[in-house]
Image (cartoon, rainbow, N blue to C red; front, side, top):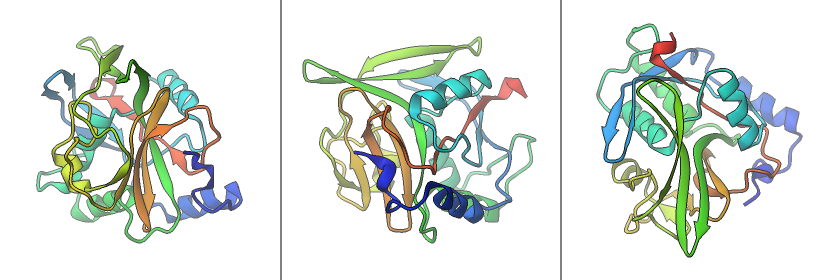
Length: 237
């Protein structure tokens, strides 16, 4: 899937300007995402950015730029945890320890799950897929106890191997070990594209549709409103 035409081939500067103008100016700083241990994956307390940055860059370049800034790309599981936190009744705190109000939470959810924005926008996720002997493996980075990054490569199992429209809520609540939709997920309105050899993942959308695609070629030119929600370690503050 080539993402460069999602906004209808409009001039790149106009597309990006439309999106930036539409962004809520109050969405600055970071959200605290508390550490988690679940099965084989875990991470310490981290801060995840309220706004996307690094627009219009391919997956590999985005990853390199983030690491140079001592930031990280969120894994699929971290992104799912982030969305579940925003959708929950739990209090949400920013990087200063201040509780985030309901209006800002709604604005942040609207930025990720748009019901009013016409311009498509997306964010890269830390997931690189390969296929060998009919099995899909996923590479991602895990934050260690000493706050260094370790690249992990694991066989991904139990996920939906075919592309189709799936239920967003079910995916968020009952994903596979690596955060993918499970094989028997109900049909829904979120457009899911299954992993393939040498592909990467992104999540994005507009008021017309939501996309969770794991089949993106990381070397293709991409839409100018592709960005990333940078992750920082809490200990870096």
